[in-house]
Image 1 (cartoon, one colour):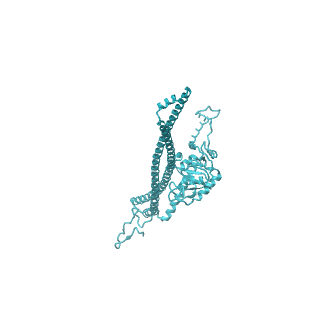
Image 2: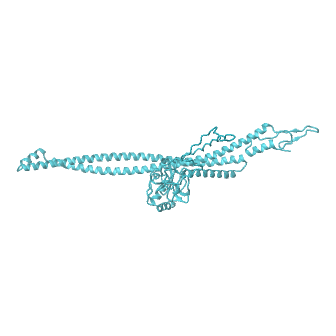
Image 3: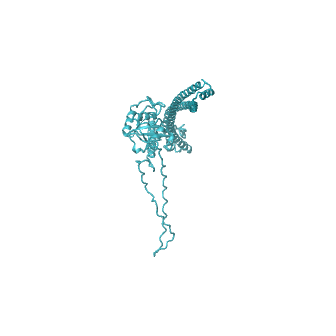
Length: 471
């Protein structure tokens, strides 16, 4: 006799008395609910009484509720992956903004230095011009101009001498005028240089503030990523425990299952992203693979479909031919992929220089990630710019400017040293946030984010720009 139903006689000939069955109205998981359903609805009973509709409904609701809980948990686990990916993208974006601000600050520092050098030169020229005017003024103060003119006439032996002396006076006047004009010009140049130096200093201060804010934002994003990773790990363990209870398994089993699901989801994202960037489009550089033919290509000028004749004139026959069946509607042709025109760029490096850049970058594996770093710690574009500089090629400082500089190539032409760019919006180069260097055999080297040193990993396709770049 089952545990749920026990029969006990109160005496000879007494009618058996049923003890109410013990039921879990809300089982902990699907397995428990299924067991309850079997117990109250399917298992044989010592009594002919069948479980009530309420019993069956309660058990089924428990099963359905547990199944919904499992789906909710799995959905939240997927959400954790998405939030972590978003946090990583935010860090990369903030790092790029700081690198751009730092690059602008370097340019502003150069402008200030050049403006101050120009101001110093202009001030020296003005001082020399002022000294020349002062010397002429002192010379003219040694006598009266009127007496000098009268003396020139009285002492002259003839008209010719008078004319000569007047000419000399005019020459002296012109010399003085040129000196005054030179001083005025030098002073104007000095004023302009001073204004330029002041503007350069003001711009430098503005860029310094922007760089400081960008660095603070990058650090906030980095801290947010750390928090997201920690919270994700903690919450993931809690959710795995819930799944284990719902499925009557262990946390280890659920962890392995979830790891497999995560890997499958990542693989599917990568496959979709790779198909996107490798999808051919008209107007792409040479070497782009041709589009595969469609299974049912439509002719350019299809013959018009014959008009169905409901009652064609019959040939001498017992009965007219039936009307032809209408042609099936053609399957809709998918929209072609958008044509992406790469920005202009020029590749000046050789394959040997690309190999040299890769070799240099590999010597930095294990170096720490540093916001704005160009050595001994690096950020993404700091690593790529220094690697190519070591190979003798200038590719600029930031990932966005590097994308503008380099030659755009399809991914089937990648060679070591080429650059792979990642963006928040792959149709908009201004949203590029990260750059890595292709090292061959499907691998790349990168400095990705704080806490992750320079490393060589398998190439990622998600968020990759439509074209790679060749310096």
